[in-house]
Image (cartoon, rainbow, N blue to C red; front, top):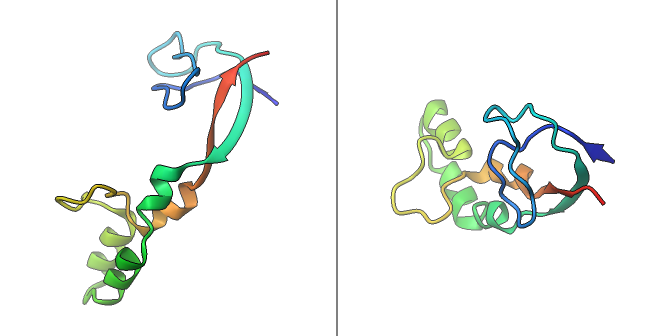
Length: 94
């Protein structure tokens, strides 16, 4: 599958930055799917267990989403980051 828009900021090796700052410039390349290891590292058992100790829905939701990012946490994306685990990028069109 060929995609033509984005990325605004490349996150994968070999992905060319979009020619327009808003990511809407023509930038055709092949779609790629991969495992996002960094996102998976944020969904640990400790993070899930911490959700059970929240006393308000707001605190639960903030921790789930990692917003605001917890201080001194190397993987501050929250437990919902597991949805980002199957991610990917776009490689140069071949």
